[in-house]
Length: 208
Image (cartoon, rainbow, N blue to C red):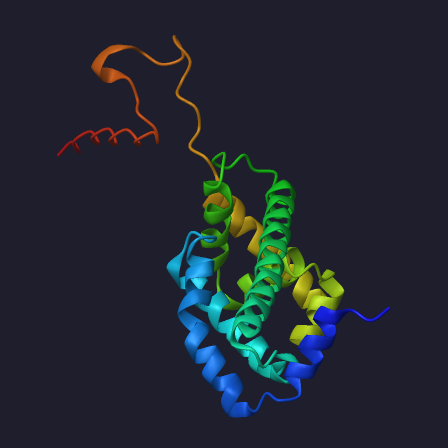
């Protein structure tokens, strides 16, 4: 059975020229940006998602309805698809970040700060090590596939990966707990963390 709404869209889309599509995108760009500003925390992310929406809409402009109101609704449909893809990417990235944390056997700060802490730690690595960590833990490649992609021997990838994990453990290491009561002398002589080496004892004067 024919769908009158789809028939109308198909009929309208045949009349859309590049100039029509450009005008529709320009007129609706502020609405698309506002759509994302209400749905994501970062203005920069909203601008990126709005740009992606307009780019996808331009690539699919032959499907854009010719009627102005229908074109606006069609653009919001494109925006919804971009938003869904964005949230799927975030969920996948967070899951891969949790897997990286588990791999490192750390207990990082609870909550959203944990993922940010890990990403900052990865960014602080040497570039080659950071890229290997991203490929394995965020892009979900095997170490062997990552080595092929980077065009390095598998043995190099393994040693580089081991060094990267060691550096990440150090970067994410939490401060040790405070000493237990009675474990250290009380009062002003108590040693603070990290322990400060005691001053060297003066050497006895040479006999002349």
